[in-house]
Length: 281
Image (cartoon, rainbow, N blue to C red; front, top):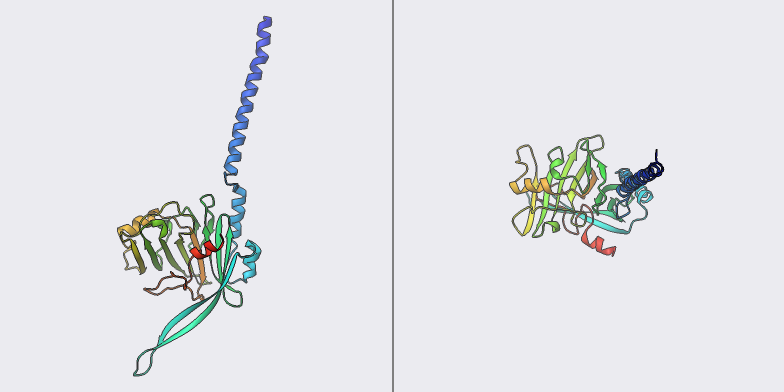
């Protein structure tokens, strides 16, 4: 064996080791980039936040939400007017107005909003979770026996017929809003609402109607064609659910009537209103 060959073999080993070192560095860097996106929310942190959101529940004192989420950014009293009519013998039905007081709490995190509404004693009767960034798509456990991924799941993925649907239409789809109410038959009877809130994360949105402004509202039964129209079908296949809400059966802020809707500042909204988001700026 010549002296030249003896010298070349160690050099080849050095090049092979150097190549392996670069390969390992690339793999490690790739793993780190996967676990820590550019916005700094690691997979581990996202999982921890999702776990926290799944501990939220109805019927607890608002202190449970404060312990899990910190102090609310906004808090305000809210009064809902409940209108009913009583029958009078041989007379015109008498209109009765009853005021129901609530307290609304609003929590803001860099990646999500949480809204909680209590009675005057502090018992939670309603709450909502809205994702606000593309990087955070929490898997929320639901009463439909499956998870919904906020910011990723679409309405077509929901496994049963809703109790009621309603939409506020707009010329720009992302300025519209839409929700579906589901009535759950369980020991702790409650409603779940899946919605697209214009103040949350919406990657895309399909126009719900050809009109530039207006409303869609319908209670759903086995006899109701569903989806209601071809445009409604296209909308449900393409539009993301970015808000999950839960309400107890006793909570009176959910309009389950045939024509009423949960829109307007005097009603309970599903997720943050524009004035609440602006109040944080």
